[in-house]
Length: 367
Image (cartoon, rainbow, N blue to C red; front, side):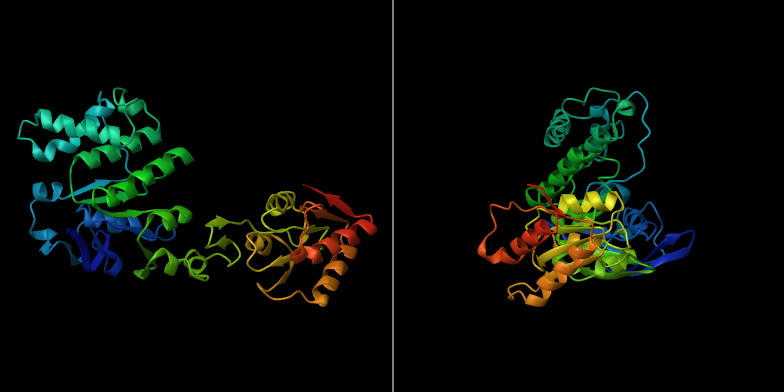
């Protein structure tokens, strides 16, 4: 089993330390992801590990061997990387670029054997890039280039893979495909993978371990479930606790404050589209009555001026229904996103609110 670890690593630029005491560890079959605000130093850590930047203190180990005691050719056969910098090519096809990943194994003339080319073709097929492999690399889209750069790292045939923001500038399809490949490489190829990501929802899904870069140190390391518990991530990025839902990874814009104009009767996810529309139109609203474990509760909490809610698995109190009716009285209209023909016995309170809004001639039903 291969392992990469850092011990009290100090990273920075021009002899000026940026982050100190970086202690990371990743083993074969695992994905370690660095997260943190822009400029926190995630790329600096990765560039230091790959020797693009000079180590300012501490050490990086591959297995029991310090990388400072390893030749570059030896490192190239153990560690591959995909960084954010654009690769400058001249008249090279996608397949040519991928083939450069085999150079650590060729002689001084850089001639690839049949076995080398077989590994190149296998890597291209693995990332589903056969359709662009013969095109000019410079003329490809960002997603196509990123896919081929991953293939280049794969055919380098190393035990450790480092990726700096591998999903930057990619559309949804490419993002999902790249991350599925990364997860496959850890699981099926038993690679140890370290990467940085900005997309927190994707980091939750693909990572075994997450390291949070904050200020001049690694602030916290843990599983996605540990890191995304409570309001820690919001504090890490300096946003309000209602701006991000750590369960779904959803990000919310600041709501429109002021006197509510609309009361929304929702639940079970039916009201989310209406909440988002009202927020875009800068229309303050009240949402209710929701249980705290309802899938749309966090969205309502983030975007609504007021949320009438009950604790999960607790009986509804009459005072909550009375509060909701008062808000309906104050609002200009009431939108019910629930099907009036499908109210169940556990949703009797919202049925009452719908009937009350109807009596007040304020009801708009949206199925």
